[in-house]
Length: 516
Image (cartoon, rainbow, N blue to C red; front, top):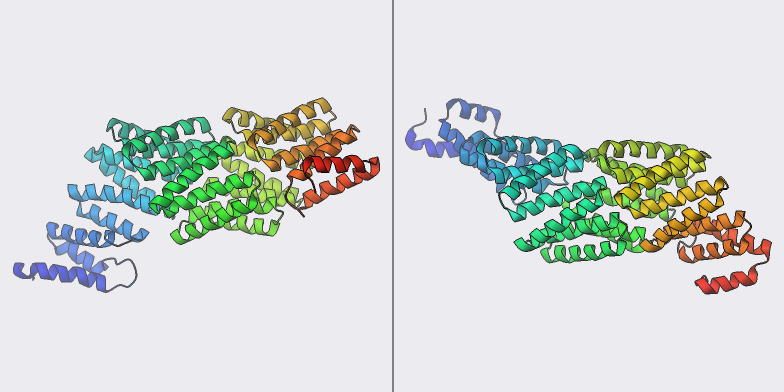
């Protein structure tokens, strides 16, 4: 029997003994020691043991996921009001620390338990924080309906408490959710309100993240130069804060805009730096998004083996992390690789899998993006009416959501269908609308693709001078020297010039459009 006078020292020795039996990052209490504590220790001393262990875990410089979970369990085990308050706060901090690093199912379970305590204790501030954390994780997992409920509740609680900074973070998550669903206008309104709140609260970190989100919304609407401006502001903010996660996320976003503008070297440079930072931080989700984005650049450059490898690596991580939207995105990219290889059956399979995934998420803009891809496959396979149906659906969604680049791509596809059906006036109208959007967005790859088709339309109508001018413009825009598609167009131009004796006019057009 342990005397009262020696109890304190014996208790400390007991706790230390339980730790010393183990190696590694996480020290769990040996089952025999734990059993002894529960059977024989007074309630207060049992709670003291839980608190000592919890304090040990959370005092680590960078607790591992297992240490966060263990600390939470011990605080719950202590069970007093103050312990539960600390447990709830710890759950919020753990969610922030583990964001993007996996363990989502276990993290959700812990947050749900903490949510129950917050409801019983009527702690609305912490409940709002927990709902925001839960909603953010559900968003990343693609459970958009549940996420919306949590984030709406979080926003209402923080507004009720007049907590401007926390209201800003709830608006941040809502803006991210709405952007992923393709509701760009509404996402932009939430993002602007959050930016205003963060400025009022003097929160530079919040400001930087909101500049990034507003840039993503601008990108979704096709306002690429506006997006670049917001990304530059975000990068400045994150660099001032030495926030590597923010820097990596924004570089990845900026890379996607450079890719859309055809600035492939800049895009790859941003992706490489973002990937380096995500790797150093252990952020698996970020790594996967960069790999998926890199594959798009490699596909544009016809480096199909590299594109396929990047896609495969990203799909593996997205599946490991249960990120359904990312998996759908990478499957669509894999379809692009297969289509470039003329493996249309494989491409259609990838696209259909991606469409199923995006439909299940309620992500309308990415559905439209895939419908444009399926329209292209159907057109290549001679299923022209099926292609038209896909393009019309994509066009409707693009117009509804204000996604100009998707609208333009659908119009180009509809022009192709009209041309092959000999509806030449309709084809020219669709192509002209598509090229107007491409000029407005300053997307050279899309403009080049439309000019190529306008040339084909002129050629089949024996309007050879017009065809030559369209094709020379396309070649001048296409900087992918050595790319198979560019070489094919150059061969077509050379043949036309030879057949129609247009060498002199060709030379004049080359000079006019700066084609060497």
